[in-house]
Amino acid sequence: MILVFLGPPGAGKGTQAKLLSKEKGYVHISTGDLLREAVRKQTPLGKKAKEYMDRGELVPDELIIALIEEVFPEHGKVILDGFPRTVAQAKALDEMLKKRGLKVDYVFFFDAPDEVIVERLSGRRVDPETGEVYHVKFNPPPPGKKVVQREDDKPEVVRKRLAVYREQTAPLIDYYERKGILKKLDATKPIEEVYAEIKEVIGNGD
Ligand code: ADP
Ligand code: AMP
Image 1 (tube, helix red, strand yellow):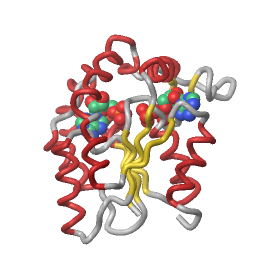
Image 2 (cartoon, protein in one colour):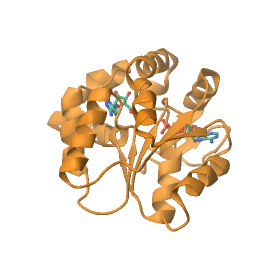
Image 3 (cartoon, helix red, strand yellow):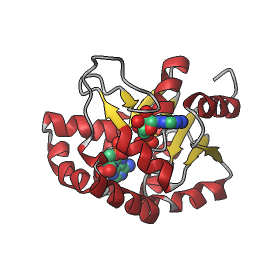
Image 4 (spheres, protein in one colour):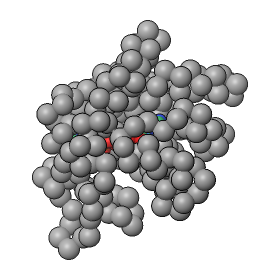
């Protein structure tokens, strides 16, 4: 089973992907997490990606596609979280999977209006050691836990990321709708309710 989690930044894709990978053994591939790790380790990819990420822009397609080719597992259930983000990435993914005799099974579109997104991103906090994600109001970190705000969750960058999402990523909704594999989720619901909706679509065995 190959799932794509699509939607604006802060819609809850990573939160759901972590729950599903913990409970059901999916391999969780978050291009955002992989890029942040590359930036931290100052790898060649990290050095190239950093300036785009800091500005809230997308990292060039060829870098992202090469990254996915490298990390995509030969076997097993996979969640792609935050990839693809452009039509070119989606086409490259289709080709890569076709060569391996695979295809995307479902694309979950996390639908939420801008006010919800801005509230979620402004309250998002992460544990810099484990990458665990919290929210000051909706999912508070345990008392005493050291958490930080992502640089790109600050208001100026958030505005840019939303504009980039609308221009470059939102066209994928139509791309996957035409393929008949798009499942729209009401991402404004509480974490457990969104999770239940996802499990209903993929079935209990998976
Ligand atoms: P994404 O991976 O789509 O960027 P995250 O999973 O990091 O989004 O979630 C963004 C923020 O919103 C986090 O602080 C997270 O704790 C919080 N959050 C995620 N899902 C929900 C939800 N259903 N209701 C309320 N807050 C949520
Ligand atoms: P995320 O953690 O998914 O919000 O991603 C953080 C940042 O990483 C984005 O703002 C982009 O700069 C970059 N990024 C993550 N995934 C992709 C992708 N599929 N294509 C291009 N850039 C990406």
